[in-house]
Length: 491
Image (cartoon, rainbow, N blue to C red; front, side, top):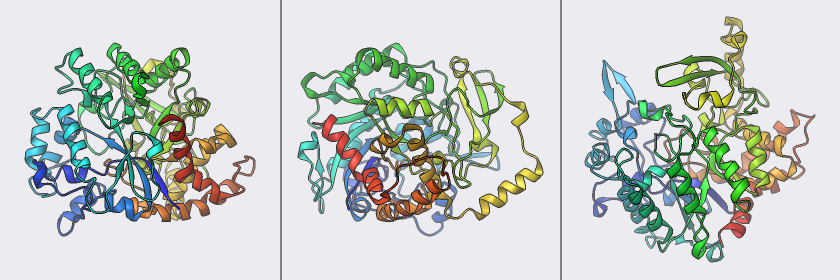
């Protein structure tokens, strides 16, 4: 059995280890934090250790990695991770004590000396420099060059801020010029994620940052901006067979709806892609809102967590897919990459702040969410009951993953099995499920999904989940669906 990961970041950990390329470890190096720093790594949800070095990927029998090239956003570097005795601890501060994070490099990002487009190109070159190290890998510009007997890599870009030197001071010519450079490089990009976790001038983002606090992570935009539409049109242009698809991950719900409308009117042949997501478990007409609080520049929304199968739940944040969107993606012949982040999947999301997100004031009325004050808060008896359920729920991490997958099938029917895959987001600052903590564990993930999916489907006898052969379904999920997608759209 071979596997495909639809979204991962194998170059970022070693890239951040040094300011100069000749001082960096190659991307095959697996970083393991030991000693006193292990406590710090646990505090930061295990984000310091490697989750998908190239060695881990090949050890995990992954034959194709769709690699997200991500230029580190400035608020990621100087945003607050922890406050100790009124002293703010951020990634830049931590880099003074962690030799796997280079202070000079992070400082050049934090203070704007290294532009985002420069960072992106240096990161890409860092990965390319590992192409012929050890067993090596093959960079694909067409699925026709795919070799199942070795590691293959396809490039993508995560976050449109990567087109800028500085998102607050730029020219349209600069942005479009950088995009034109990407489209005409020797290596081809599969998709481009239009938004990420911080504000950008092209498209409003969905709130998605919990570990690091900074105002710029809170959405302030209003859907897709004029320049965003221009970038989308240039991405989807088919000249010289250089179309780059749009990945809707991180886009706000309003922006996603605008994009669906654009495809309906002008690009009916374009599939909708979301590379690393979870599902909300609800329709966007029935958001499970508990409480709405308006601040000066944004709206804070608290949710009631939607219930899933076998004592699981969903993450209702708008960064995840609503039921209507699942159908839109399937109808477009698109693909849904399922994230392996526990938080995105709805596991370990029990505190009030875990069920609270933020919207820009200009977009919030668009969501038509109305607070149900009768559902806000829990009695002490209900809290105790839920705590007991959570404590005794066996293997809840794999259950939450299976719950997200089965909900897609429940909404989309049997055909939905052809449109879902794994987009792990390894090394994207995630807290991965215990069943699959890194890319080495894909075989374990397969084995556990084959066991868990039928059990959970059986708990809902009123729904046909089309699971007569769980092994074949999991093979589709972990290999076949992406290969089929690329056979059509990456020629």
